[in-house]
Amino acid sequence: MSTIAAALPVHRLAAQQRQYGKMKITAVKVMVVRGTWDWNLIKIETDSGLYGIGEAYWGVGVKELALNTLAPHIIGEDPLNVDKLYTKMLMRTAGAGAQGGVTMTAASGIEIALWDLAGRILQTPVCNLLGGRFRDRVRFYRTMQVVDAPEDYGLWRAQVQEARAEKAGWTAFKFQGDGIPPKLDPTYSLPGHDMYTRGLTLKDLRVIGKSMETVRDALGPDIDFAVEAHWKYDVRDAINMCRAIEPAKPMWLEDPVPPGNIEAMARVTKASNVPICTGENLYGRDQFLPLVQQQACDIVHIDIPKSGGLLESKRIHDFAESHYIATAAHNPASPVGTIASAHAAASMRDFRVHELAKYIDWWQDLVIHDGPIFENGYFRIREKPGLGVEINPDVAKAHLAPGEKWWS
Image (cartoon, rainbow, N blue to C red):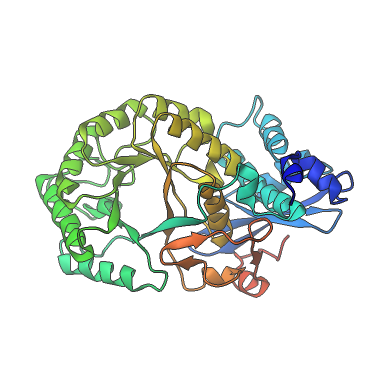
């Protein structure tokens, strides 16, 4: 492409390809594939035969809202007006405009499919449409699940060995610090606990500290790992947890207190020598605004197919970066949402690391792609249009949720 052509507006480039002015959105389709969660996969079709695929965050009601409420607002529209269509969907729902929840989740998935379609129209990777890329590879961390008996420190060592043995070659990990005590178990009756309190006893803090020091010893001194807390603790107990795990030098403690009180999160952040990472339950710039302005965390943790899609997440990053706060990505998605999220991450200046949670044997097989998705712990941007992948119909059909059909 010439320098002059590269400087032309997106729509003019499409016109030169004889596609702009002829192409309109004709359908929005959704199918739910049952993987680690029920993945809401989205397809945008056009009258040209071109289409785009995306993924919305998992959850009940996302498919119905996307098809019945949001889709009518974009049918017949020019698919290259991605930001306009995303804004229109939110403006036309929930009265004055949706601020979060299922509506924004569904709109985010449609927005991702629109970016994939735009990349296919313009024959360029999606990250190039988000301002270009700062990196060709996006680093990932592998999230491990709760061990069965946290006081059996041999189980932590075995989990480290299991994670490091995976062929993807992970260079960073996350371990579950919130399985101590197992709060969701109503039979848990050790002194000082019931399933509703947010406190940590001295024994809990000792076990958490010893567990994370065991992980550090098994990983070695230079391998990054995070610790998950899942919003379970009060402010003082969260601060005590930070002190307990500090000797293990984790890259962050994630979601130490419930997400609704930014001032409480700020108290923990200011008192802790362990970096605090949070944000996966927030939607859009407005909800991230006070978190960043109050310096209430060290890393914003954006769930990109949930928090507003690719461009909105880029804007959240840009605002955080202007306050010298780094960005990471939360991620329970299928390969479709994961790869889309990685394209956004590639376009962010101060992006650190991206999550892969609850990996299953056929995860990579859900999409058709060149080579392994992860190599040496990184996802590499392929020089292919859009997201660069197609859904594998055989694998998707084999794992459809009950009652689902191929692109219904």
